[in-house]
Image (tube, rainbow, N blue to C red):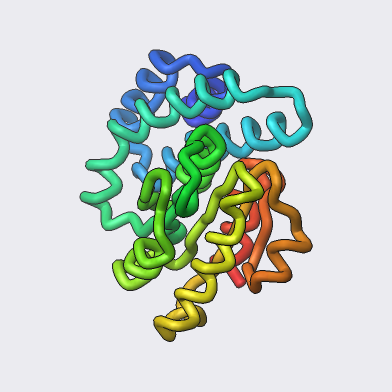
Length: 210
């Protein structure tokens, strides 16, 4: 088994120490950082995402895998910067105004980072104006999360705020959360709906490529 396969396997099984050792080993062997990211970390997180979607993995396994990924990324990031690696895209993610839940949002952020995106995590209780500012600051996608039916209207308000600011055509909007549906996404003019964290990352990747 090559080092990058070892790295992917370490991510999938959530073995942070082994993932760090495989990352350092691959870099010491002269493997380009971008290749370590793509064929090691992203390949591993893709499998984690698939298993999560298929109910073979649950939230704890995803969090353990994400921790291993983050520790490897800490070693990789300076090398990527040095080699002028361009992330797939930039996603600003946040739980919408009035909503203080962040577990779902954090899972999506981890999956997006695992898919090669740069993440601007705006946190919880994020106003439409903050999302508008994130687009002005360079986000190509905004990801809106809501766990309460009472806060879902803030998603519509955010899309309207992007329109009012004249920047709706510069950004893709994806939404998700327990009460959110594809129908609602269509109704408010979002570009995509993620029923779970892994799907959200897939949709973001498709939207950036489109």
